[in-house]
Image (cartoon, rainbow, N blue to C red):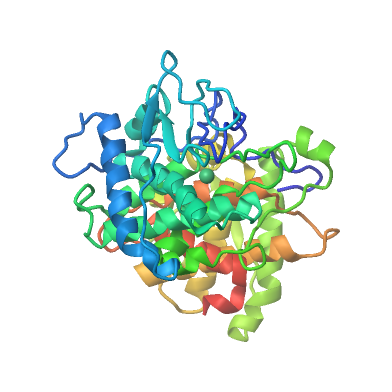
Amino acid sequence: MSGRRPLRGLLAGVLVAALSGCVVVSSGPSDRSRPAPPGGLGRMNDSSATADPGDVVTRALRDVERFWQGAYPGISDGAAFTPIRGGYHPYTRSEPPPACGGQQAQYQPNAFYCPDGDFIAWDAETLIPQLYGDFGPLLVGFVMAHEYGHAIQARLRATDQPTVVLEQQADCFAGAWTADVLAGRSAAFTGVTPAQLDNTVAGMLLLRDEPGTAAQNPQAHGNAFDRIRALQDGVEKGVTLCAGYRADNVPVTEVPFTSRQEAATGGDLPYAEAVNALSEDAQAYWQRVYPQLTGRPWEQLRVQAFSSGAAPACPTPAASAGGSAFYCPDGDFVAFDNEQLGQQLYQRIGDNAVGMLLGDLFARAVQDRRGAETQDRAGQLAVDCFAGSWTNDLLTREPASGIRLSPGDLDEAVAALLAFGRAGGRQEASAFERIASYRGGVLKGLPSCT
Ligand SMILES: [Zn+2]
């Protein structure tokens, strides 16, 4: 978000030069944007939490091959699937990966598909154990399904697309495999829960592809917002949709920085300034669109940041963020814990995580004022779509008017939803569902929410 300055990107970390195909990069030394590793990590079938991560990788790869045996003919005019010929290659610092094409073999904390050798290689020393330990086996499976997606592109001879499209297509293919897992057809991964899916999405925030041609177009990578959309496309609609990905039909939400210099030097708005600017902007947005929604004028909504343990009295709060924030129908105001929630979101994720919180609270007020439920699953998803509609307005408005978002901001919103919107009770929407609903509002605007 910028009043004057763009935000720093959520995923700024150590980017490693690509060996070929694509690279998975861990977040680097700064853990500012790192979502807290969640509890309740998933597990592979009949393997305990102490399973060997390397074993998880090979079992995942075999399961992905099982999936493509069935799915590939549907997108290849009936041609049969041929598994990769160059094998699976775990590597370590002391035993680096095989050379790929003209590239010298060297250790990097990543995973990649090599088109020349038709093989998949991964860092078995650092990356995979880290992903497995922090986010669970399904994320490891997803990373391998993504790399296998590049092997599928090579088989289809469909690699003449921009890198950002190829990366999202690989995510989409991996999502289609994930749907197969969720449908219970995988022997390797069973009983995957909404919480595990949320863990996997959280892990995606730490993963970023660097294309082999990065120097030519450093802006061409999908942000986490788009990558999660591609994953969900695959989960919901399957390989045929993924195979149809083209530059002119894949929505890419990248927003240009005002200048390269700003992009390089940009930082968050100061916390208090961010809260004030975002609150004012949300107020103005709902003043403008609420009458279209309900035929009634928008009454100014009071926003109160309170000190921990000193929440303003509210008999029946419509709670958000586990109760640290709420809309109070009785007093008709919204409130949030300034230190434990607002500043934490700001420090750990960025200023648009505060934007997501305020967007949620304003949307909760909208939903309640129009006489609709805010707390059940459908109500929660409506709240998220309304919040997304405000983001849509921020993204599409004239440059000169008010604050604007940068690509990092969308990722911050997603990270915030993962931070305070994880799957909890049985009736609650998962973060996976909430992100999808939020994205609907972002991409399609307010009319899509009702
Ligand atoms: Zn890739």
